[in-house]
Image 1 (cartoon, rainbow, N blue to C red):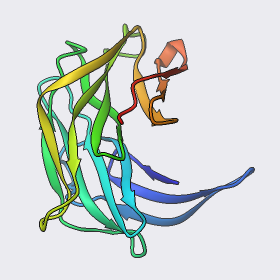
Image 2: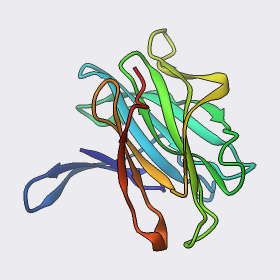
Image 3: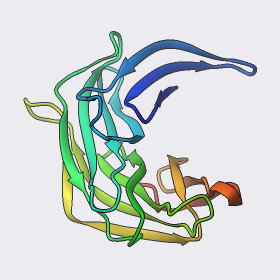
Amino acid sequence: MLALESSGRGYHLRLTDDAVRVLREFTVPGVEAGSGHNHEAFHLTGTPGRLTAVWAHRGQDEDPAVLYTAALDWRSLTFGPRRSAEIRVSFPPTHVRHISDLAVSPSGRVTVTSASDPGDDGPFDSAVHEVGRVRTGGLDGPRPVPRARPLRLAVFPGHKIEALACASAARAVLGTDDENAGGSWRVTPVCPR
């Protein structure tokens, strides 16, 4: 398992029934101290010999999210050149984190969750959007190709969705962190194909 913290530092983990062990550590490229970036999403796509890492700075209100891509050498856990694209969603309309998590389909479609977070008591709202594609071919490495306008796939009033995992080609598991109201999960048909 790979996990990325908000600072851009990541961990290759091994999970067993009763323990978590850190096998290796890494930092995504381009992390600058004091940049204000807050990474909330990380995904690997491709084949074992040709992996692409996709991650995002979440953005906040007028500060757009930034979707990043880079080739990843699994053996050395090093990244190729980083490419990026800004992403803004129109829902939720206030206190929005433009990308709170993401998933990439085998065909390269990028689906994100977006969430409002006005404070520990909400009110929260979330949406799922298709925001573009990851193009892996070409001499200059993988790159994000954003849609002109994100396509809203679903809206979830009253919840702050911060986790998206594709359980199958057509079904996603969404997880919430509704702060003082607890958390929940839901299976829904919003995964990219």
